[in-house]
Every structure is written in C-alpha cells, then in structure tokens.
Image (cartoon, rainbow, N blue to C red; front, side):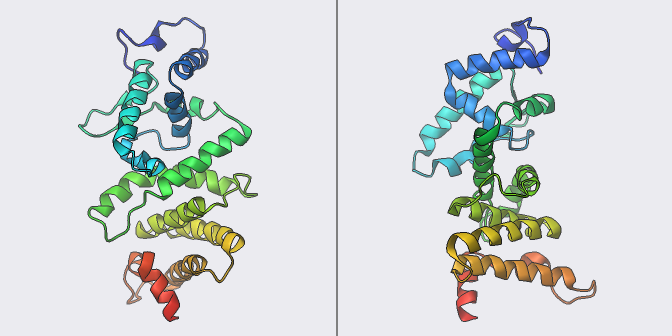
Length: 253
C-alpha cells in the first residue's frame, strides 16, 4: 500500500496489521456507511478491478449520476484509509491488495455474509452483455474475474444456504452460464446452467418460458461438449440463444 500524509491506516500502532484494518474499518463505518458496505461487497468480487459501471445494476432506478457521485465519495474515503488503490491506467478503476481482500472476506458471517454474496452475484450476472451489444467481448473479459469469484461461492454452496431463489439471482446464474459459454469454459457454464435451471423449476415451474430457455441453452451446451473435434458446428457461442430470440425458438418448438 502507498504511504503518505492523510492516510490514517498508516498512523496507527495497534500491533498486528489485521487489528489496524479492523480499527480503520470501524472509523470508515462511522463516517460513511455506504463506503463500508462497498468494502463488504468487494470481498465477494475480484480484487483487481472495480469500476463504477459494474455497480450500475444496483441503481436501476434512474439515479445513475447521483450514484456515481456517492461511489466516488465512498472510494475516496477507502483510498484515504489505504484500503484500496487507484489503478494507474486512466479509467482503469480501483483495486484492493490481496491480503486486504482476504481480511475483508471475514468481516461478516451468517446471514449478512450471504446477503453480500447474493448481491455480488446479482451485480455481476445482470451486467453480462448480450453478444449484440457494442464491444461486448471487452466487457465480458472485464467481468470474467468477478464472475469466477461469484461462481466459487455458488459452487461451494452445495446445500443452497445462500438461498438463491429470486428472479434476479436466478437470471444472474443463467447469465454467468452464458458468459462462460461465450468464453469456451464449458464445464463452468454447465454448472451455472444447472443451478439456474434447478432454481427456476422450483420458482416458476418447468414449463415457464424462462425455465425452458435455460434448459435449451444447457442442452445445446451439452451437445457441443459431446461433439467430436472434427464437428462442422461452430463455437459454442453460436449455439447460445438469448432474450427474445431464445423465447421465439422455444415457442416454435
């Protein structure tokens, strides 16, 4: 972490560095609750690249500019306490040291920890762009490390203690499957599709169009996995159906 004036984290003499961070976090939380919440959420995302655009999903009420100002205020406070760093490249966002990131992952336990894990999944999953969007491949590459972090939590939660059940969470799981499939990571895509399918079958039933769309994408993925290397089929990304195109295909079937 960088040093210098105005960095309260470096002024403490509390023994272990973990104790120092805990003291600093208490001060951050007292000064700015949203900044503390951002740090908690970040523990469930990748540590190397966070930018405001990733969090716009959480502000779909049209208050984007106001939320961006609050984001800059929050990261400003975290920067002053040396919890995070500004990436050197212009517009490259912010990063968190891996050791701080590991420490932050232990800030919460139980239901509160599950709340932030679900929020991280929703933020990342609902940010996955459609292949028709401009520069979608660039955004996919930026999202992939965050998606991997979320997938690790999901896959380690075999009993669904996270309680992934609402529409946004299940759609986020499906979108992570699409993200992995587009990147050629078929095993991870299949795991996300399976989890989304189980949730949607329970939430809205097996015959619901959204459930059938997940099932269709899962079957297409499994077929592509079973193809021989000399198959005439194109990349798995060409097999994925999304949005209205997917629903139309289901209705025709």
